Length: 245
Image 1 (tube, rainbow, N blue to C red):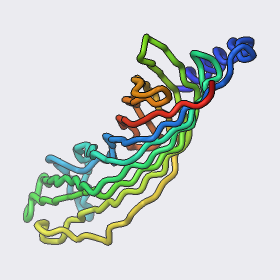
Image 2: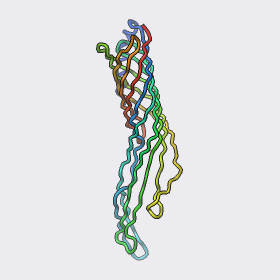
Image 3: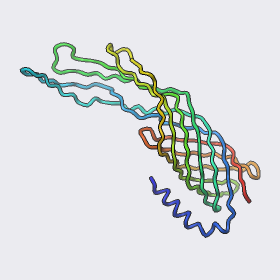
Image 4: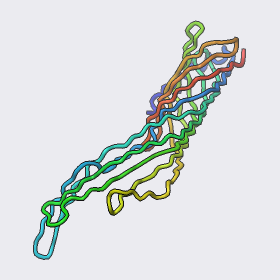
């Protein structure tokens, strides 16, 4: 995943001779963002499983095969803000610092059932357990930086960038533990976990001028982070202010 950054560094080095012939410009972007956020990825027991037991004089040996599972990967829509500052070092290359905050009050949950059959048996041959997992109130902040490439096309200016940095995420997760009756859930206190992780963003967009030094931006990024929940899509829109000659 580091190859795009190595490529960007090589291009930056090759463009050094043109720096002296170009007056650096700066761009400041501020606007709204929508984040399609993968809150968690977890496997929960689900389906049927058979435990085979062998009895003999003085012993009872049972084999417990792995329980089948179902993957729970909820995606929540978060709304927030996005800002960035870009130093255009050449007409086609710049360096961007990007920061954002995304928030939501949505909740998603799943309930699964695991049926266990004991063979052979004399009394209770089948047991059923229910499981539940829910996530809610995610909060995501990112701080990213990296190269940005510029592609002028008439009035419209397109751009693409490869950014890396950090992500702080907070999410409330609740486990539903099967009770003895297997029909009720025992819910522990809902912990809100806060984690910091490495993150990367790959994307781009277009700027359309609305005034001499002001443009309207629409962009999108594929955002990934380390951990089990790492595939997100971010869409941004807002104003770009240009500074410099």
